[in-house]
Length: 330
Image (tube, rainbow, N blue to C red; front, side, top):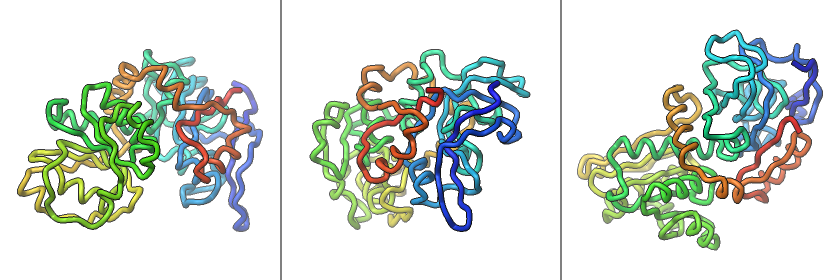
């Protein structure tokens, strides 16, 4: 174990919020049972909020951001993980309450980790990241409710976002017919290349609607919430299912019970942060089986730790599309 390592460190001293690349001693790592050399992390929207201070993400200071990581075990008090084993972490408050992955070393709880699937390299896992993992959790939830490619059209909202674009791509690989809703209809061709058979303007769903609308979709994956989610529920076919995994439009849900009791629809919440280990392993195994390297290369760029802070500013300014993978050892 190297005695020193580089990390992105966020401080808030005398109401002055700062983020910088610092060299730390490994004695400064949290006192947690599994120590890692972090190989790759990512720059997610939540990380962008944390680094720029544009959202109340960080719960304590100093904080190392980074909600995703792949690492190699360098010390372990856990019987589950051996030295040199490759492991994967998403969520559990890492990068918010606990030091995260945007560093060359990390200390974490073994309960937060799963083995890296043998079908994925560390780089590939972070090209997928929480976005792809959340999309896969949503698809598994639909499958458990009996939704198949023969059920009918599947709506994906926020389709140009991280979760949405992965959902479009994965559903198409699995043989589903996908309708993509987006505020960037000028990027329709991109969504059709991912596998959408139809692209609609998000405004068709984002305004107050009727308790019941025409039956249109067999299922939906929604990352928007608010009126959009209410209108999706109103537009589901009998026995339809919608997974809710985001709140880009808002946390409110101005809906009616009508589609639930008259059409027997189901609304399933998708949480990626505190998900049980068995669900994480299943989702990541499926991702390793499905996702193609050619797709990952199209949607991701790689940077190093020194470039993270500038990239966070660009991300929050809307100037970055796709996944940003951070090579922490570079």
